[in-house]
Amino acid sequence: MTENYVYVIIALLPLTASMLVFQTNPYHALVIRGILGAVSALVYAVLGAADVALTEALVGTLLSVALYVVAVRSSLVMRLGVHQDSTAGAEDVCFKEFKDELRAILGKRHLRLELVPYPDAQALHQALMTKEVHATCMGRPKHDKHSSGVGVAEKQPYQIAIRVKHLHDILQSELFSPATSLTYADVSEAIKTDLGTQDLGRAHL
Amino acid sequence: MNLILIALLLALLIPIYEAWQDDDIWQKMLAFASIATKTSILTLVISVLRDDWMIGVVGVIILSVGNAGLMLLAHLLRRMNYIGNEGTYD
Image (cartoon, rainbow over all chains, first blue to last red; front, side, top):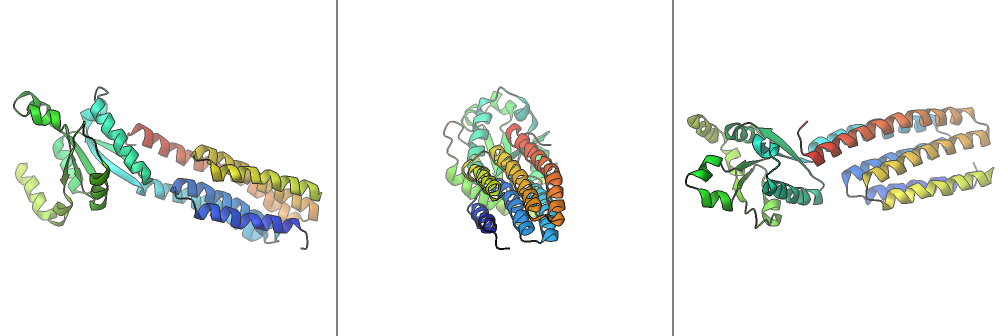
C-alpha cells in the first residue's frame, strides 16, 4: 500500500465532499452526493475494503439518493389551488404573468410551484381549510364583472389566500405586480380557529 | 501501468470540474454518469494492476448497477421537471 497514486485518489474525496457542502440547490446537491458516493466507493475499493465499497455504491449512491429525490420533490413545493377554468384558458395573459413571477420568487428559494385545479370556489376554500393546498388563487367571478363590480374585478383580478405564514411574508415583501394588483387574504389565523371557520363554511352551504 | 492510472485520474478531474461549474442539472447528471463509469473503470484497472480478484468483482458490480441507478434518478428528475414546467398536477 505504498503506491503513490493512492494518495491522489484519496485526495479526490475531500474535493468532492467540499463541492457537496458548498452546493445550495438541493437537487444539484443530490447529484453531487452521487458523485461523492462513486468516488468514495473507489477509495474504499483501492484501500482494500471491497464490502464497504459495494455497500456504498448500492445503498449510499443508489438507494439513498433515489429516496432523497422523492422526499425533496414532494416537500419543497408550494401547492397553489386554482380555479379550473383559469388553468384551462390560454387567453389569460394576466394569470400567466402572475404565475411566472411567483415561480421566479419561489425559484430563488428552490421551491416549486404546483397548480392544483379545483372545480369551484367552495371546493377551493375547503381544500385550503383541510390543508390540501398551501394557497388558493381565486379569480373574481365573471358575473360580478358584468353586473356591478367591474372596477374591482379589472383592478384586482385575483385574490390569493395563503395558509403558511412564512410564505405569506415572503410573497408580501417580494411580489410586486402593479399590473395585476393582487390582494392577499391571510388565513393563517383562521387555521387556529379552525372550528369557527368550518362552522362558517357549513353556514354558507 | 502507473502512467495509465495517472491519465485516468486526470480524465476523472474533467467531469468533476464540469459538475462543479455547470448550473444545469442535466449537465450535472452527465458529469455524474461520466464519473461513475470512470471510477469503476479505475477500480478494474487497479484490480488488474494488483492482480486482486476481489476488487475486480466489486468494480464489475458497480459498473453494471450504477447505470440502473442513474436511469432511476434521471426518471425522477425528469418527472419533477415536467411538473415544474407545465404546472399540471399529476
